[in-house]
Image (cartoon, rainbow, N blue to C red; front, side):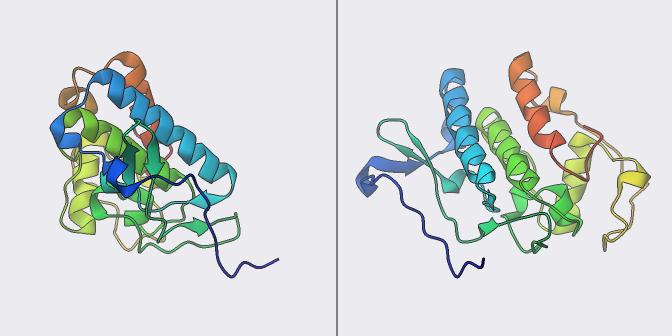
Amino acid sequence: MSFDGLTFVGKKVSAARVTRIKPETGLSRWKIKDIMLQLLRGLDFLHTNMLVHRDLKPQNVLVSSHGEIKIADFGLARIYSHHVALTPIVVTLWYKAPEVLLHSGYMSSVDMWSTGCIFAELFLLRPLFCGYSDIQQLQKIIDVIGLPAQEDWPAESPIPYPANWKSGNTLNQLLPNLHQEERDLLLVSFNGCESCNSV
């Protein structure tokens, strides 16, 4: 079976009633929890149907006037299977998972990574990792998450293992006010990353 295209059908929502989430405005803990629950349910639906979004960021998460979350911009989305290679040219840099930065194989874990970045941003009121190149982005991630063991570094990566890169701030230092269940959710998001198992 082959697909020539993909069509989405969804509930009609008036453009006047939809806004993008704006982490910099500050949201209540309850509202962040509600946004994340709806976002994760939406991702579960996509991933269950073998679709990876590949460009999750706050600008692609819309909120209706009734508080309903809508995942938007499926321009980079792909149907995936275990036999399909997906390109590394995806995702806005600040929300790219390490396996994408390292040109390693990936699946739905890239969406989970991006979701973790969005989650942290909702609490921080700014992006968690703000690099200006793939290598600088990877450095910023390692600074917070830590450097994986050399044997976990993908052999096919164009970036050699950086034994001299050190960790600095930890998630606990950057987000000291997270409750335990919020910290657990963030760690689950980042542990989905194939190349960054040292969280």
